[in-house]
Image (cartoon, rainbow, N blue to C red):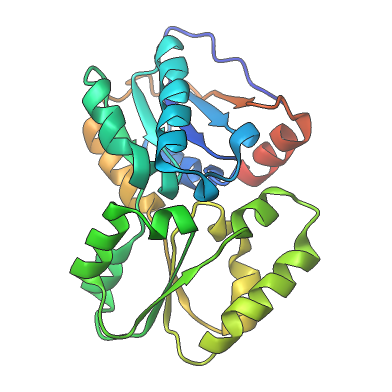
Length: 253
């Protein structure tokens, strides 16, 4: 189901440790509907949240070089861990291209729901990063809870893990039931399981960084002005997993 992107229009490159970044791509298409996209799913190195800073920097550097070689006009980092650990290094190295990185929506919750109890769900790598500490120190209140969701992104990445996901969430989220009004989804995989989270926490409001990133991207990227062109999307998986490609397009559309 991979679509041909061989046109004169420069594509936008987007990458994640797997297919979770599809949640970001959906918002990008809303803001930039006439663009072509190359989506790089790095299943080979999934999950990023368990890797060292040095490993993440090297992995994301290789992907960025690849996307630049594909003539991309901008790079979107659709992984909170990669953004937190590698975006600064990538921007310093590749100054010729906009590199736009997602981050947890802490500021949005602070501005809109400052007095309400909030749970931040994120990977180990994101939570341990300097960028995350800066965000939470600036925008968290004394009713902000941080939950390290080790292994959850990997379960979501594997589509046959629904029972394991439900068991995982039941164990980890039960202490927060009835206490939380807002949930910050600090990994691009997590919006794919909102319903399962709601089943445990009840009615909560969700926040993630995809909308803010897409609006920021629109302000930085020179848009394709061909209004008649339908966006074309090329999916690449680092393990060449055709099942992931199929699931990616099912989630996208």
